[in-house]
Length: 261
Image (tube, rainbow, N blue to C red):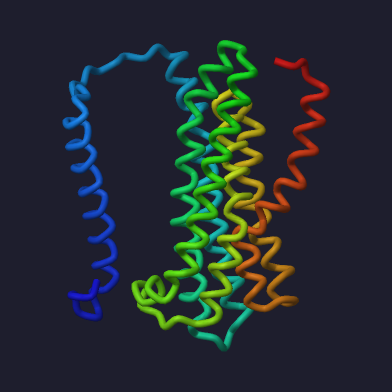
């Protein structure tokens, strides 16, 4: 981005993203070869029932991203309309969001690693092992979230310069508030993947969509007039707290009505 002319900065962002994906792919192939993992490929023909099950399993994640893209458009309009005289407000919000998304994406790795084990132990009806996997995944994610919070707060001046923006109190306060809520975000994501792996797709959809794609905009509508810019930062990941408060009693009610596994 820094080497291209001013009218090509956006193209530089796209080229950098694509090049990063290519480097990641090549590095993954090299790592597999070092570990002596076989890279042979053989097509597998699925039966119609298996195809339907695969589509059904992928729907919660796809619906979440679809809803999130719609919400992001509404969110940007809310930010612009809430601060009409501040031309830097939307870029500032994007810097905070990007740093928060980077941290949450990394932390989600701890939850994603548990999903196959959830599915295996669920089919085996091994409740004790499911609990152990949940505890391990949640603890690892919690440790990672604390580490990321410290690292991001210490390195904020460097991160803001990489984003091409001067370090401001808005960015500092926004990132700090977002990072404080990352353990809650990790908890919500653990629920999402657990229910997805155990074929409770309605609950998986609820945990995936309600906090991120429904509560976010509603919270911004109420918090921006009251708290100003802090209302944006609290909404970015604070919606996960409200989501848990709303969803966990609902899940407990369902578990009481249904037979225990």
